[in-house]
Image (tube, rainbow, N blue to C red; front, side):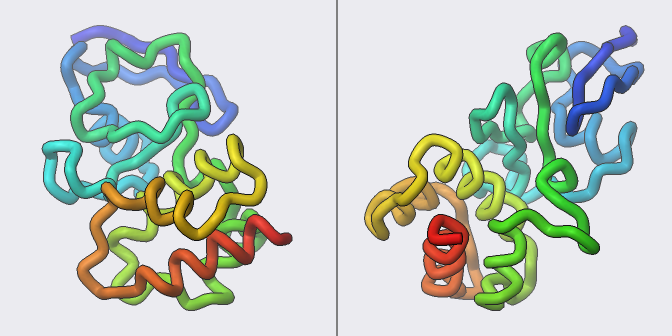
Length: 152
C-alpha cells in the first residue's frame, strides 16, 4: 500500500492504494466518483473512460501508479446536474442515454474529441466513438448530441 497525491477534477486528492490498483477502483471506491463505470474490465467497452492530461483513457486497466502527477478528469469534472457542460446538456436535450450505462464513456470520449476538433464531421464522431459500446441502440442520438454540442 502506498499513498498517492492525485489531481482529480482540478482538486488535489490523496489516496492510499496498491500501485497496481486500477484507477477505476480508486475513483469509485476511494473518491466516491461514480461517473466511470465498470463494464468489461478489459478496456474494450468504454464505460470507464476518464481523461488523463486531456486524453480519453480506459481507467479499468490504468494503474494508479501511472497517473501520479497527471491531470485526471471524470464525468463529474465536466459539469454538475445543476450546471451541466454544453456536451452533457446536449446529451440531455437529445435524450442520448437510454439505460445510461455507456453515457460516461460516450460523453468523456466525445469531450476529448471536441477539445481537439471543434466541429467534427459525423464520420469523425462515429470513428471516435467506435470503440465505445452501447447496447441500447442510441447511437443516432449520441451522434446528434455531439453535433449539437459542437454547434453550441
